[in-house]
Length: 488
Image (tube, rainbow, N blue to C red):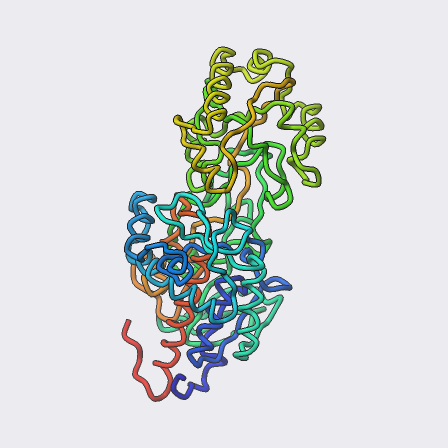
């Protein structure tokens, strides 16, 4: 428990945002004995975490150990940094990797269920291959992101953290070079430590244009699956108080069909027997390349590629999904969004690609997947990790279809308040502003151009939230009447 509290403050710690990061921060601060106020601008808790699969990337966990997976924070750190070309901040990334295991164990202790079993997708509880990984680090909780939020909220209530919904923070209270609280509806709520966990900026189109211009590649096909509260409030705080931002130009854009409007939970999935070709009509990628790298591959081909499949594949789509449905594909073909032709040569003309390139690519694809080994792009390994038989049906039955695949699903943004390895927010001068911490998408320095594995953003939210809560509580305790001022 902390030392006696300074009654000059309303609270010891104020947390801004009740998504995964804010809930983790409030719980960890309260566990350390702090009096905590949790503020949420929306009318419900959960943020983007509640809308997610809840997938967590982490190293050296008890779940991995139970399944015989040999891993370490140092190995995770090296992989993370190499994938991002060492353009993210090494100190904060090292902290993230080192704290990931403890955060998973902390969640398990709170009641989150991650069974020690192999999972073949982000929606099946257990340990999964979650993208570009050197070892499996994808921890899938029972009940997805909603389950994570519910467990954390029960802990919040048990620890008597005050929650105020519909409370959007307008500004920080900064006096004598330190943060002393926040401003709400023109009134101050005071605390010696504030954690900004207000989410990203995906829900604000103007900020998206400023900080993630690549989202413009999809044009009118762009759609956002982040929570509506992800309005980039941290950007305004940075501009008003001289705080550094990090991660400009980075975010997670998933590759989807031009006609898609929903996350795959609702939209469904394209047929397995499909080939992705570039503007030259040649196959150019693993059609199941993880979203960590697929947008970058598209960028090398002008920003988008064609997905080509036959009528058997269209007809075999399972019913009940909003986008990838057999009848919906025909509807989009009638609109001209999906191209449709009786032969591959005729389809190539509609696609404006060389017919001989397309026919040769499809023939090669059919040969490779009849054998079940894709020696060109190793897609058989991606399929096997999902538990899918890599012996795919040939693309051979007309009419044939083609649709543009674009980086059109905006999931999260990576421009946040730059933090150090203690989650303290840095000013533009590189010095930490005393009393201010950040976590989740509002924190910059760890989430990079390449989305590491799957579960990077949820793990980032919970790890940084937990650390920020601990750091904020420690500052509050240090500033209580029986402690000296914390050195900065």
